[in-house]
Image (tube, rainbow, N blue to C red):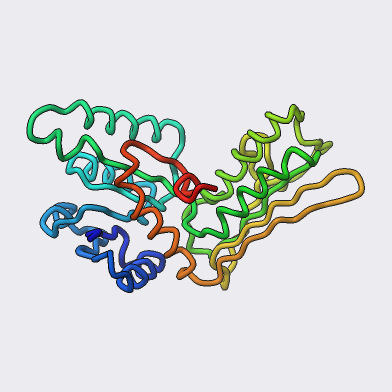
Length: 258
């Protein structure tokens, strides 16, 4: 039985994840952690795993606690740059080197960072990376509800990195853009050489399209999450796999063999 604590359980995404997990025979939600709740509750409840859908400000402290207490973590919170990932690798390496009684508890801790739990979104990112080497131009538009804290989204950032890596491997140069004047921000953010545009609109959940173009043709790859229930299958896949993947894993696609 996978005994799970959900951090951020009172939020819209967290509550949807709790509802989904409670339908599974091999998962027991043993702790629902909200803002201000003590992380020690995870240990007292006997949690073997946690799902973190909190905030970029809180997530590193949560993971430091999890690693120190031998709790596997599946993380949907955004805000992970190279520095944060390096910090996590350091914590996990220190845990593996721990000696004595604590070593057995922490040596095999797995942490999975998932920029998106939606399997459809993962496929969208993979298809975009496959297509990127065939097209001269590429831009990303991500669309979310207006209560989302970060922009661009973690999914858009991850997509841009995948697309940029595919373009570099194919020997493509910079995306063509003759813009010389404009209002600041009109061309969006630039992530790894790829323009990313963020829309925040009431009524949306989570949506992204990747637009690719060459002379005479365009290709649009789009994914829409219409309900937060769409994230539960990805969360479950992560929970069922993370204990067998000690150390840090970035991207749910590796768990799903995509």
